[in-house]
Picture 1 (cartoon, rainbow, N blue to C red):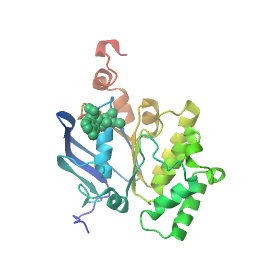
Picture 2 (picture 1 turned 135 degrees about the horizontal axis):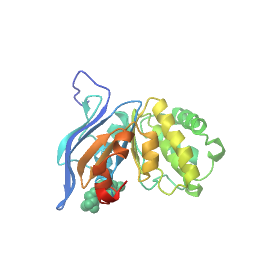
Picture 3 (picture 1 turned 120 degrees about the vertical axis):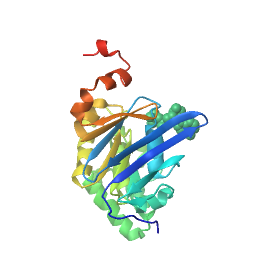
Picture 4 (picture 1 turned 30 degrees about the horizontal axis):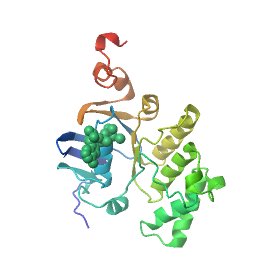
Length: 250
Ligand SMILES: Nc1ncnc2c1ncn2[C@@H]1O[C@H](COP(=O)(O)OP(=O)(O)O)[C@@H](O)[C@H]1O
Ligand SMILES: [Mg+2]
């Protein structure tokens, strides 16, 4: 097992994470923490380092320096599979469902991936199908789903590993306004279930409406972190994130 430190504060914590790729400084000394029962937003222009951070938290990439801990347990170098067992799950920016499998099978296979028996995994899948109102899609191939439903399945699938923290990388991309409203309810549902949610999205309205706190990255560095009101009223953000001059922004 991985060493743990005490006291175990309940949080997903990133401390001083730095990562560069062949001369590109993707992340410089980034620190943040996500608590159970909150939706934590991560925003920033393209290339800000958001996906790199999610890859590092979920074990698909390693930082050059810095650490990732879950409830005090260091998982910086743990494999993705181990992280699922430590309570961290993610969705991918581009779906990643098994298109040839049905919705139920996608959920079941993911649950089996954390060591559940076929039968237990089937129960997990059925529970998630009803929790996410997917019963009528259970036997449809995942590759045939409309966007909005596909995203819902992506979130349900992340929950099949029974995580405490879930990382959502642009889960609402490509959804229309109606679908985004529905999807916001799914995200609030995760929070109400006690999960800590790290949400990345370009839709600032969505972020401002569902997040308790928001962290802004620009070119791999933290610009600011605050409540939706603090972020909404930030002149720094207007300048750096929206790319406007402060005087031109009202
Ligand atoms: N595997 C990689 N190899 C080289 N450069 C990368 C790699 N992954 C990300 N980058 C670079 O790191 C920076 C941050 O990228 P990314 O984390 O995808 O940003 P975001 O998700 O905020 O748009 C970009 O300049 C990107 O080109
Ligand atoms: Mg990205």
